[in-house]
Length: 143
Image 1 (tube, rainbow, N blue to C red):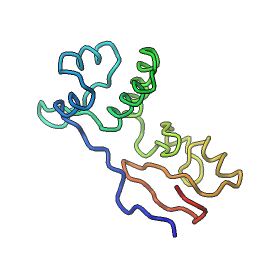
Image 2 (image 1 turned 120 degrees about the vertical axis):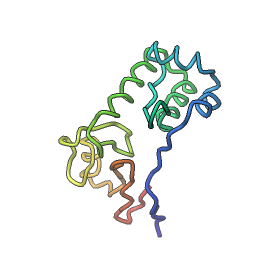
Image 3 (image 1 turned 135 degrees about the vertical axis):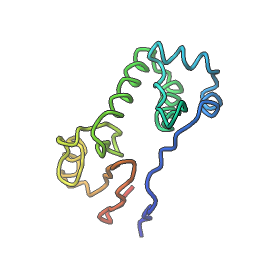
């Protein structure tokens, strides 16, 4: 029997001290990297308080561990910023690529994953909708 996750996918907001600890950099370096396009801008969370989406911080950490170049990191930061402004409910959990809501295929799959699914590979795709995960699978293995 496949496990079903009934909780939504959480993407907590990380305050600066937590981000500093996670990436091993201090405030001045974080803001210098933001200015250079090497780290995502923070999000206003109320008043003068800011925080970073945990998935964005993790994406930068993963890219650095993978040895990505600064140019690739800048492109990643641009994609992360673009995903913030896209219509909600349009990030494929499998490929992690943002897809405009009007381009989503049947059952909310991005075109690439939809083509894979239509090729008879089973319903192994999930879609993150407004930060939650639709955990329905057809019982053909799931994730």
